[in-house]
Image (cartoon, rainbow, N blue to C red; front, side, top):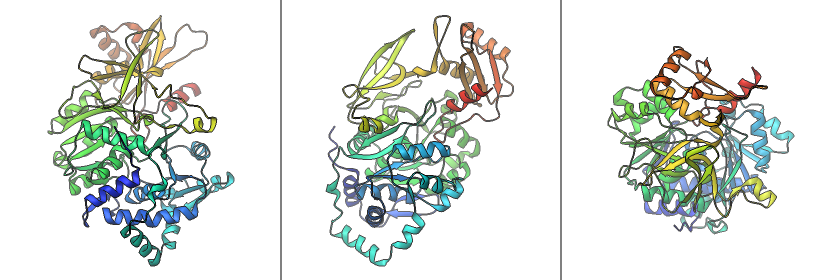
Length: 506
């Protein structure tokens, strides 16, 4: 699948195909831009970015907003690579990410840092030789002459997009950190545009559809499916500030009337609880990713006449690897692999049903950033080890059994912690649950502990359910710990790393 353009070039092609002053991107803050004004904004900001930054990588710590989108594209129009930072990371992790990304300047906003309680960040970055560039100050530098110059450059088609090539780095994203320290993933223009084209080939979304996403743009799903895909496809794009702002997101859905929404199982449950049925009336499709979709969540939305489609991916794959689509969907699976993705399944010790998924395709990352520095590759001849245990049925539908790291051996048997969570979800569908294996010194086997937000859940009720389902006792959690709220990442995933740290501390 050729993707022989760069993101700026594809954006210019989309703008040329959709002239006029109709808003193409709208955010919760009330800001909206037509394609024409979006391109002019990118042209103007790219000049400022070019003069204010010296290294090729530019840090971006910005909210989900039209301004964030302009900053992202502005970096690329300036032939820079934006390193999009996760503002939910603890300060020490943010500092390490900035150092790993080899940036000398961070684009952000004073107001945003204040809201995120990151007021100490600029001073800490300065200690590491990294300048903080506030967009409020940049805006003051942009006078009428600079705007006129940007308009002329756009009209005369002098944006110098030829400085970048398809295989150049387009963005640096960081993995979620749910199980280990975040890795810096380098995705090229070809990687991202290939993934956009793969998704549209499998799921040909019409230009008349309206996309809504409040998923953060530092997350590959939010960036590729929530920003790049709709804009490159000429779809009106509605951006929510955060998936946690349920009332505000429902207000956006009511007023902007999107037909397609991206989300995760956790956020879909929370949104449903805050919504009245009429609030979601405009939605035709919801695409869920980043975590396993519970049957209970599907039932809630399908009762409203909304088609719920589960997909699967990884940051390293740009991110989408497989997805259910309206013409080919099977419950309990994450759909079929996207076009032009090869796969192989390798055996894993102790697991008979399934194996470790390896994938290869044009959407697979350029590399990890540390690979480039060390002149090596984490890909084996282009193959990426997803770390997920999967099966593929006769019709090509992919079933995720769990993360390789989320299996533990007890009495010679490999126990899936994800399977335990799924079974508990059947018993208590409206609450959150997380299973952890705790290694105990001088014990011959790990202890299975279940964290739950259901105060009524007991060892006895779990034991009765497992007995009725004929699940062996070796799979039974020996401890149940109630938590009013389980730690969750901004992407919707359970923060297992925090749970493990809490376990170690106790």
